[in-house]
Amino acid sequence: MTLQLLYALDAKCLSLARISLYSFCLHAPVATIRVVTPAGVDITPLHSIADAFQRPLVHSVLADDDPIQRLPSSLRPYFYCLSALAQPGSGPSLLVDADTLCVGDLQRLHALRLTAEHPIAACSHHRPMPDRQLALHLPTPFHYFNAGVLLFDPQHLAQHFRLDAALQFFDQHQVFCRFREQCVLNALLSNHLHFLPPRFNLLSWMRHRARRSPWQSELVNPMASLLPQERANAQIVHYSNGCLPRRLHWYQRDCFDRYWLQLEAVLHRWERGGGRGVLQAPLFTPTRQR
Image 1: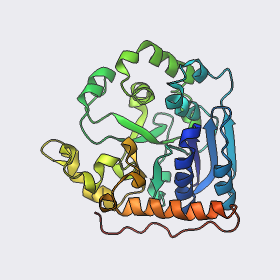
Image 2: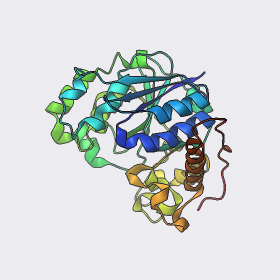
Image 3: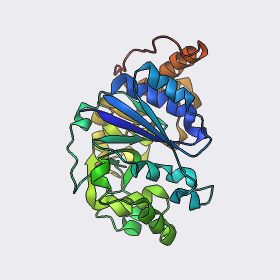
Image 4: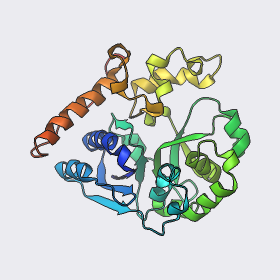
C-alpha cells in the first residue's frame, strides 16, 4: 500500500518543507504528493524534489472563497491544515508539518486499517494535559493528540469532518482553543481516532537531550517509560517548538539532528547545481542516542 503525502504551507515554511519532503521520498512509500497553499506561494523547490524521485505533485491553491479566507490573516496559516484534511482523495493520506523528518520506512503505519468509524490516526502528546481534558471534554489527560502528523482516509474522514463546521466551532469556542486548529481537531475527532505510538511523531521534549524535563520523569509522567524504546525505533521526528538542528549547539545534536543537517547539505548542493541529476543520500541509520 502506498501513501499520499500532504503538506499545508505558507511561504515561510517552504525551506523546512524541502528537507521534510526529501526525507519522506527517501524512506517512505510515497506515491503522490499534494501541497496546499494560499495564492502566490512558489513551490518550485518542492516540484524539483518530487520530479527527482518521479513522484507526481499536485499544487492545490486555496480559492478566494475558501472558508479559511474569512479568518484574520494572522490566524490563517494555522488553519491551512484543515483545508488539507478536506481535500478529496482515496486511500491513506499522511498530512505532516514542514518541520518533520522521516527516518523509517513507515511499514507499520501504512498497514494500519482506517475505517468509517476510525478514519484518522495520530499521536498523543504522551504527557498529561489536564487543562485540555477539561476544556475539550476528553476522556483522560493523555487523550490530547498532536496534529503535526495525521494519517487519514479522506473518504471516511469526510463523514465526520467538514471545514465549515470546524471553523464554526472555532468561532464559537475560541476561549477553549488554546492551540487553535489543534484544539478544534481534538474536540471534533476525539471519538474517531486511532492513537499511534510516539515513534511516529517524536516531539522535541521526548528527545534524549531533554532528559531533565519533568515530563521524562516517571514520577510525573507514567508515559515516560516508553521513551527510550520509542526513540530507538523512531519513524518520524518532529522538530516541535522551533528546536531545529541549526539552532542548537553542536554538543546538543543527536543522530536525528545530524541526519537532518546532512540532508540539508546534500539538497543545498543539488539545488546550487541547478537541480539536475540524481538526488540521493544514505538512508537514516540509528546510532547511539545522545
